[in-house]
Image (cartoon, rainbow, N blue to C red; front, top):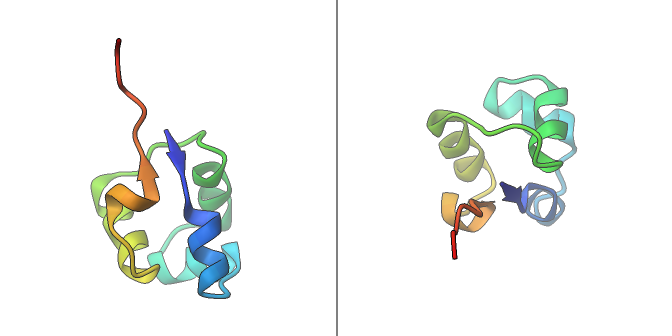
Length: 67
């Protein structure tokens, strides 16, 4: 999974720690999400999208396509 969290955070001038505080997780969770090393729960994805004023599908790119 890829994310655009870093890009959206920059638009809103939020640090990883600030975003983490707003959605109730540790900063390390945001780091792992941005690196694509952690898949968020639906609730966390929703909370992040709400804070960043975006759609879940725009922020989180699920690359499960099989050819």
